[in-house]
Every structure is written in C-alpha cells, then in structure tokens.
Image (cartoon, rainbow, N blue to C red; front, side, top):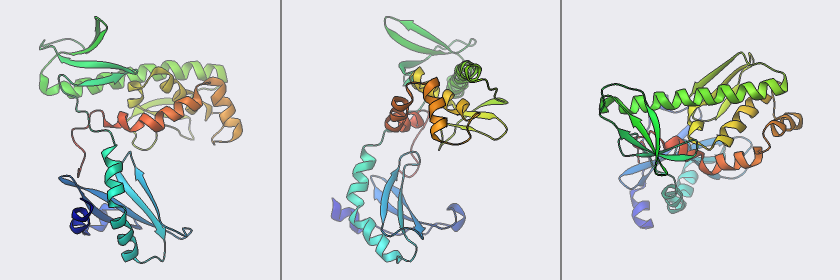
Length: 263
C-alpha cells in the first residue's frame, strides 16, 4: 500500500492566490481524493516538523527557511503512510438531514422531518429518546436546524455571559454568534464577545467555560496568571473543558458538513 501511495505521489501546481503568502502546497493521494500538505518556511526552525491541522483537515510541514523543496518532498513521501493513518482517525462529516443524529447540549438528538407545513423547530423527549422536530419543506430542513441551533446558542451564551459578567463586575458591549473556524470565542478591544454557535452542541459546562473565558478577558486582555485565576474562579471546570475541546472539538466542526473537500 505504501509503495502505491509513493508512486502516486505528485506535486500539483496551485495558483498562488489560493495560498497565503509564504506557503507552498503538495497533494498526496488519499482514498478517492487528496490530502493537502502545506509547507511553511520558518527562519527560526532548525528541523522539519509535521503536524495535523484537524480543524482544516490539512497537514502542515514547517521547515527551515533555506531547506531545499526536494528535501521537504522526500520527507513527505516517507511520512505518507503516517499521514493517511492519522486522517483515518479523524471524525467524518455529519450532514444535517432527516434521520441524522446530532448532539445538542451534549445529548444525541434524532432529526425528524414532521411534514407539517407550519410550526417551529422543537425538541421532543419520548421514551428516553430525544428528537428534533423540524416542520416545513424538507428542502429547507438544514437551514431551519442551523437557525434553531444558533438561536439556542445565543440564548445560552447570553445567560452565561450575564452571570459571569455580573460576578466579575464587567459588561460586554455586545455578544455575537458566529461559525468561527480557528477559535471557539474571542473578545475584541471594544468589549464585543464572539462565540462559535457549535458550542451549543457540547455539554453545557463546555459552553459555560467559554463564556467565563471571554468575560475574563474584559478584565485581562491577555493569558496571564491573573487572567487564568479569574477564569478558573468563574469556571472551576476550566482544565477539563479545555481537554474536552482538544479531544472532541473537531467532531463539532463536522456537524453540518456534507463532505470533506478533497477527501
């Protein structure tokens, strides 16, 4: 299998406009698609470092600035089997369709298209099972589910932020719900807190930690010891929540994905 992968290995030209400045790209075969390997040159690097970017489903190879590209390509060939094994372990996409199962506040919910022409998306608990009832045209089911989840996320964050802000004696200027790819939350210099709606999919204590984290930035716009003291005082589960996100965060990003580009 490895020899087949190596023989198929090829460099595929990519328009410069599609890659950030300073990056090069190599594609290696994976199943019916390809895995992008981004080559990043770093003046401070003394050796090659390979890592999997789980959120972007890509591979990043950091190399010394003066290292010949041929050396980088040779290294990638040697690590092709390892890269493919790591990708086999990544969670797959979970399209939002009738019959799909998605988590809401950490509990599994079956998506049910009710066929009713009117009504709101609602949760039904029956016999220990949780259903997410979605009325309306099935063609609009995905949009209606996403709108529902974003609304629930906003309500949960408003409640959590209000509680933590009151206890710390601060007040955010606004709360925004987004689909952030690289960060679960952020705090701007003007006091605007932004959160990923996907956190409503996680257990409630995870969302609560993120709310405490960003509210704490209203006191400390850094990650100093004092900042973490504020955060842990508000959310004693901080360390466990961070570990949970490292282990399961990519699963949240797969909700609503129809397919994985290139794979």
